[in-house]
Amino acid sequence: MPDSALSPASSTPEVPKRFRVLFVCMGNICRSPTAHGVFEHLVAQAGLTRQVEVDSAGTHSYHVGAPPDGRSQEHALKRGHDLSKQRARQLVRSDFTEFDLVLTMDHDNQARALALCPPDQVHKVRRFAEFFQQYTSPVVPDPYKGGSHGFEHVLDLVEDGCEGLLQHVRQQLPAQGS
Image (cartoon, rainbow, N blue to C red; front, side):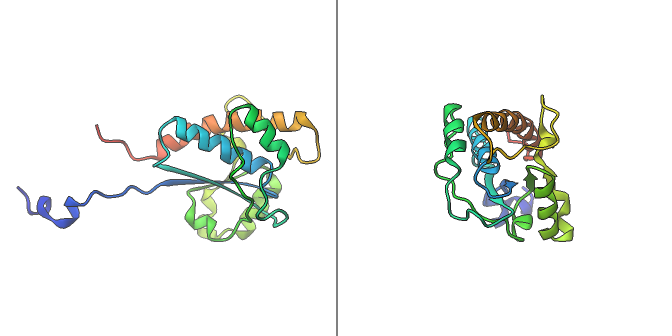
């Protein structure tokens, strides 16, 4: 038997690094918590909760500590996504080193995120719309000042994008042993 097979390092199972995804919108009460909740749900259904971590943040500090908008919660719950445990927080510089993907909901969110992002982490900042499978919208529009239709449209886009994102994340995870 090779000496390396007896080393203490080989007897201790290596804990795999979790793939971390952060969704970003303006206030972290509508779009990003919706994406956070939907993606977390999909990750759990796929049996990947030990390998994938999900969070959300806002580019502005308007709602820090607040739960998601009641309309977001109501519409998400109708589709089986519980957002009630989430609380808004503001995007911080360390998020870019701690997360593998920082997904923005629109062009303004992306510009603000990039302005905060360390130059060597810019490759992690992407628009969430890149993962849409069926929709062609370049952004997830903010439903905050609109009615029910806007929140339903956000859910349609988010559910579509989260399906595409899950495919992408699966490709990033280390192959599971057989």
